[in-house]
Image (cartoon, rainbow, N blue to C red; front, side):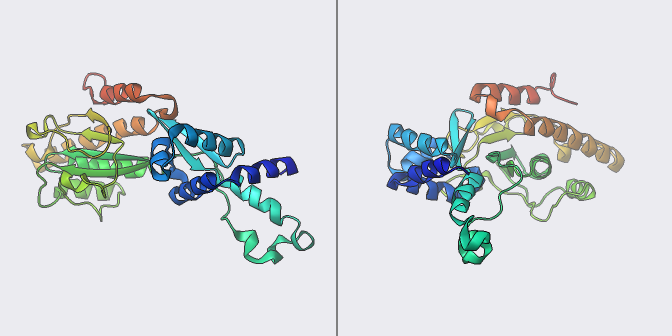
Length: 282
């Protein structure tokens, strides 16, 4: 790091609001926070906060990414480590390890310093015993590190459908935490805020979706209910295999959408296309 860059970095931090910003963002890790959340948490006017964020971003201590209508900010840990490392690189005759804990203020940076905010996705169906549990398990695997998957039902069953659990286990999914739950679990101030809510049945018995956060992007991917399937055990197994494949193909497309370049309306359109039986992958 050049001296002039270090001066810019320390100057950017030499202000009370910016220190508060860095501490708050550091507590959120790579997930970051939306600009509106930051303004509310720090009780700052949006214009004032934008000024401070711009200074920190110019000093390469903060990075941002657009997610729908929101801009998400996070600490650029490699930049912060480089800045602090500037203080210790000449320690003890070029042996910073002798400076004690000062040389270990931050963990080693990840190989990929790009900001990858995570998205919360809630899958809904009436009983939360088959389709939504499948979708939760599949997204946990194909979207690991970028998506947090949840599922619930309007009238949850007592237990998951055994045939579905066996299928997921056979395909290497962790089913230890799967259980049927009411969508009321995801309502309230302490519940995780959802970015996407995807219904996997036609109507959810005519009920409106629960209030699971401010303006999540919603979609409907109506899929057949294996619990209502009439046929031999072999035919039911075939049906579950096909259902698993339909859900997985949709979710593999879903996790690879260019989220940074799509606004809310474009994302909604892409999700609706995935749920359109005439256009969805089969």
